[in-house]
Length: 166
Image (cartoon, rainbow, N blue to C red):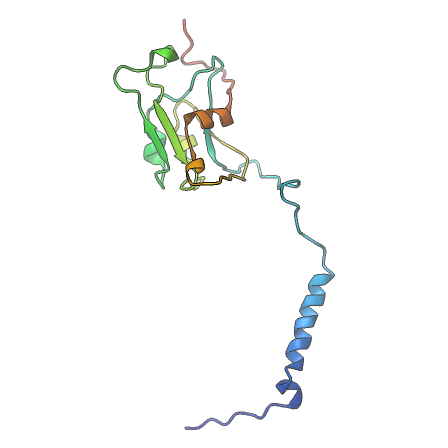
């Protein structure tokens, strides 16, 4: 079976209707309100329930609140958190906290910012940042160690101090 094509008109062969339609779209967008944001100077305001990158906090005495329970590591869907506990001897420099982590690393490239780590933490040692711009020059820079996570988190003022020396 042979299907006969309809003959194109002169305007259709010159693509004039298509060109005119393209100009209409361009002009319509040209006169709209501009929505470009000047990024480093202007930033979005994030909503109250925004879940950003996780970080660690210290207690008012300057000690890490994390006790190496490893619940955040177990609950992390992409396995972005790695915790190395101090071992059976503990860490004497942290006072009454018996299991302050020897190493605590979060791979921010793997993290999906789900917030499970914050929800499961029994010591309230992990909180989520409200910043959405995480940058780095290499993959190694995006693996945050304990010192960097604590520097981002700072000191968290609790009403209850579980590890206060008595």
